[in-house]
Image (cartoon, rainbow, N blue to C red; front, top):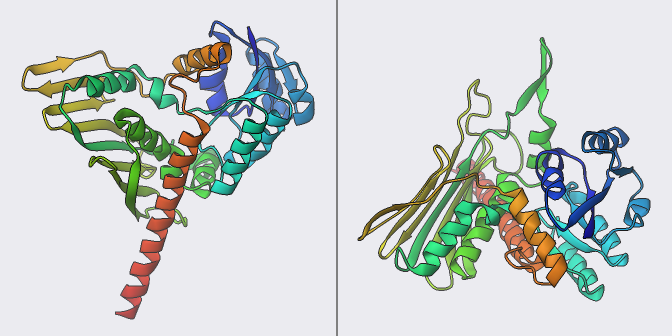
Length: 344
């Protein structure tokens, strides 16, 4: 039984990680850490009196084998280095770090400690993603030539009420935009899926953005990536699709086009199907996320030392690097276009 601690007691730990760890055979959740006392003690009480810490050093020394890091990306480096110094395995939420230098330092520290540093790309463990991977591997649509991966939504709205008369900008919206925007926050999942499904690296990319809200990073982003063996992936990510609407409606879909057919997934109705020359083949749909599946894989990795489908730190670095560089590219394109317009 591996003893697990969770660093960061925000929303993703509350609805995703902690419930999944508690139901996973082979994992025992023993400690929670968050610098916010009310938050960590509230979560500890909610899930049955788990030990709660506001001091990172005390948490690290609480008798752990591994930690799940779900803290803000700005402190991932600090958290991972503390775990490495204590000889603990790590499953870290995305994005793995704020920049390449931080990620390289984290990877080096974990290698020196001879411990695993894995990344929480939870989309890999959805039955949908696993089925698509198998269909591609089996050649049901021939050779893949194009992927269109779309997630455009409202990020729970840009504004929220603090009283019947007053609304403020949502801290969640502001925080994720300041951390890099939708491609860094959500797009890393799709970047990772494209590499994982195709077993193929990305050799070049370009990116354009749209600005509905007033931030440096675009809140709607289009990323085009060319893979080494010729496939092309388009990722569309946005936080502004209905972000001020009374009744927002997200769009989430995968389209994989091959030389012999197509695979389509639509979260609206959980449709998952392959259409090729032999007909139409459907499989049960599901959510794009699967926290229990990811933590079951983590438990097995801790038992065997084999990460299985869990992304390695290098996978997290590649996805985050592309997402951040793509966002910077979109910002640079905007500034260049603005300069050209003003010159004209």
